[in-house]
Length: 378
Ligand code: PMP
Image (cartoon, rainbow, N blue to C red; front, side, top):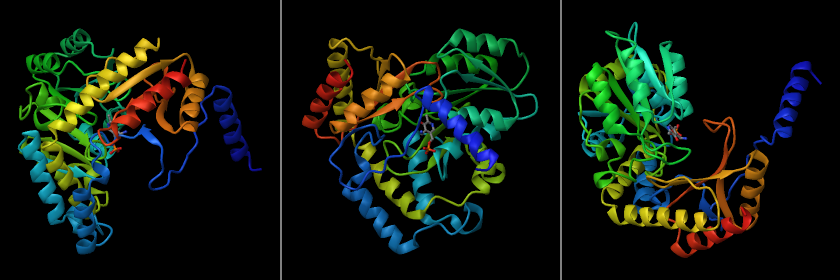
């Protein structure tokens, strides 16, 4: 075997020894597994209005966008979606990217000027971390949700432009960043606050408008919101929302916007239908909140260490990566899919099972799934 392939094999063996092997497992349409691993929080990925809008658009526009947004890829469907997202999020404008990952890379990089300091929460998602890296800016990583550390980092950089980068609902433990306090600190310094609302959009806030809106920060001129359209909205794509001047700057200079083929128009149309349903989905949000409470009570009563969820993400600490893998595999064998998070996908060395709740899962299946988890993760 070629040397470099043998070297890759040795690295795979090391991962296997540490219990960190990752494998792909295809699912088929309509499988009978109870899904507590996906991010279809409101069950909209299969909603008939959403799929009908996408099917109609695929017929009208074809499968792909055929080009980048500034070339031929910008369709009415993209622009209508952007108008609706801006209206929902309470910002001047919103710009759609082909993924949340690219939205974060593009947004962080576009906010950086010479001498900018980035202040990034230790639990931030890989796409925010990579955004900080490719921006080339000096980055201070602050302990998780530590407002005093953020204040100190900014105070140590007087007169420098700065951007504080955080998630709203954190993807691993489902806890909420102290957004109002962070904003008070950034405003005091004249810094900007970039919030990734991926796990909050559709799930928290007035009309599901997300964590930024819930914190009363919608439309603030020094706040930038990013999100994926692949979770509560059940589709794909990403969005950056904020002041019109910043969105224009992104259109004209954002590399992950300019040099990337546009989101397929059918996805934009489907997501737009999902936005309408999500805005009207207070009943779905109430159901999710109730299920989160039930999961925490039931799992803690069984002696498990469970996070305190602020939205629809609940995490269970596992003693180590092998145990997490075994628990998840046992659940799966019994028809329940749960997320299995191990280093390096966790911000610390802890492995976890992650439950992502969905109002689309029938209530009885959800309650049965909790029993299965309790039996598999003793
Ligand atoms: N931010 C967070 C917090 C996420 O959880 C994700 C999805 N894993 C992303 C960004 C990336 O979004 P996308 O999957 O649309 O690229």
